[in-house]
Length: 299
Image 1 (cartoon, rainbow, N blue to C red):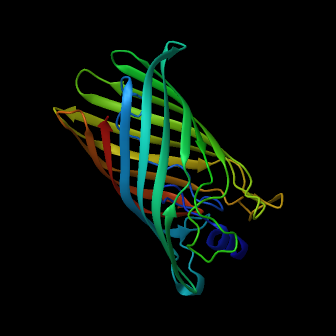
Image 2 (tube, rainbow, N blue to C red; image 1 turned 30 degrees about the horizontal axis):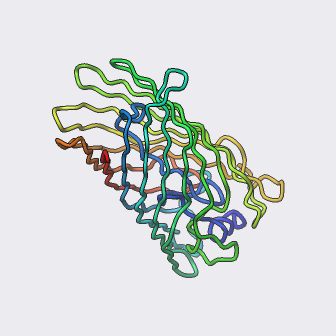
């Protein structure tokens, strides 16, 4: 546990939007980001999406218990603002509309851990999505995509705790989204992802593969929508350092989050989304609460 904790504190980064550690670095995807219309890509056009919020939590071990060196909790806090551009084209491929996207996050990260506190502000790891394909029917909508997460965030293998924003590895993430929009106003949406990571060559640490998903069940009532949303993440393969499994459980992380989500659509078809997500069943990660505001605007 001491070696694992050292890897988290010294080598660990923060995700693009300040989530938690299931591995040496942080999640590069902001879990819970996509809920309403997760599988319903909008019509051809240009779109701007802004994700702004705060996440905070305490480090938990493989049994879900708090890690408390010197009798003190290890706490992480991140305020984030991620900017995303999406272009949906008229071009058809396999009967689907082709789209692409890019996201750039800004993060202020702080950590409270013995022997002291630390903080950092800067760019997080960027994500480019060169391929998004979307299909539509009256009530069902589907999307396939591929995210490529880039190690653009600030990183130093010798940095003090809380000084790394980037994860210092690339990752590939196939994406499948589906949305049911009933005539009665009910919506059920899910976004399913599988994440493969490259090795952090500065520490010779290989983080394990993960399955994760965002979900929502909600009701549209005029311009307002109210629902329950969240995310689930399960690490499927072991973390390894120098080719050797980390700890007795491979440092495999997991988390389940749930909370209320409120959406309002303006007359110009911009969407304002406010949500809170509480994390439970946390293992080998920081676990806590995420509160954020999402703004979607057609350009």
